[in-house]
Structures are given as C-alpha cells and as structure tokens.
Length: 219
Ligand SMILES: *Cc1c(COP(=O)(O)O)cnc(C)c1O
Image (cartoon, rainbow, N blue to C red; front, side, top):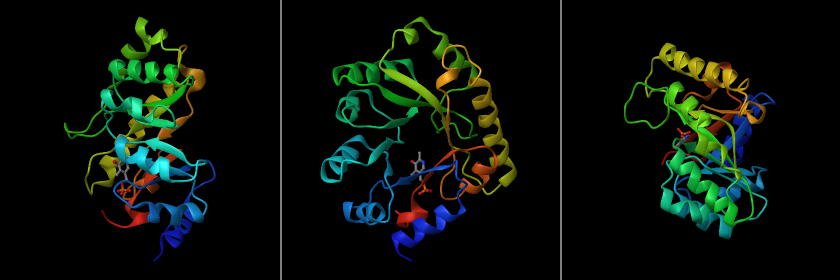
C-alpha cells in the first residue's frame, strides 16, 4: 500500500468533525511529500529540531503540530511557525511558549496534556493540577498563548475496556473544561487516539487523532 492509499483509507473512516494529524516523526521529507501531494496539510512531529528542518524544506501551507514532550530550551526554534503544541503540562513551559510567541509577535495555541494512563512513565496533569494551573495568577498574565483543548494517551494495553475507560475520563474532563470561566470559551480540541486506538477514541468523543504508522508504516 502507498502512503496516499493509506491516507485515503483512514480518511474514509473519519467522521467529518475529526481532524487528522499525520504523525511523520523519523520519516524522510519524501514520505511527507507523498502525503502532502495527496492533500494532507497537518503533520505531527515529536522532536523540535526535526520539525524545524522539515518546516524549512517543505511547502509553507503546512500546519506543524508538536506532539512530543517539549524541552523548554528548544521552544524558540518552533515559535516562529508551530501551529499547535499538544504536550504542555507545566506553567513553566507555558510561560516559555508565551515569551517566545511574544518575541515572534504572535499567539501560540496549546493543548494541556492529561495523564490518563496507568503507566507512570507517561506525561501529563491530573484534573486537580489542571485546575490549579488555569486558576493561577501567573497563568492570567500569559497573553500570547491560548489553551484550546486537551491531549491524552491511553495505557498501552490490549484491554479495550481499560482504554475506553481512560478515553471517557478524558472526554468528561474536556466537557467540564468547556464551562470553565477562564479558558472555557476557547476549548474546542480533544486530541486522543493513535493508529491502534483511534476508532475507540472517536467513539469516546475525540475530535483530533494523531496517526503515524498506519499512514507511513512502522518506525
Ligand atoms: C508517535 C506518536 C503518535 C502516533 O503513533 P502511531 O502508533 O504511529 O500512530 C501519536 N501520538 C504521539 C504523542 C506520538 O508520540
């Protein structure tokens, strides 16, 4: 199967309200261009350096999403062009994104990453930490970032019930957040679901899926 065929097959299964992020980490520009030529305009990368190199080489109508863990000292390299940062989980990182956005005279959209999996190794906030963050005084001063939703990763398991439970939990936090007086009016994106679990994620209310290996092949 070609990349274009894989993309088409996945798109055929996605409801209209679901946005597809083609996760192209580790893949060469030639592979990304195949997806681009088939109409894909949103790409997800997990390393800032790699994303910046691809951004320089590729057409400028691409929206670049940073889906990996972000190191504070690298934010400056993506600030001129990044379209959405999925993995934000601290005020410190948010402050740095705000600072670099200001330098570039723009605003940067971010998702807060929530910890829903059982594995301790996965990153993210719990609900209490989420509320502390958005209610903190320093958060109010960040005028060049916008929290537009939440992102999460389920436990790596074959147990569909467990994955469903975790996705449902994230969806319910997302729905509550929409009513929040501080960020609520901007909340629109729920980023959950990868190659192995995106159908389940959509069933549970996801409106943005991050799919890599089913499009570009294994890594
Ligand atoms: C790699 C990655 C994906 C895509 O994973 P696939 O299983 O290849 O679809 C999605 N989200 C994040 C955060 C990733 O790091």
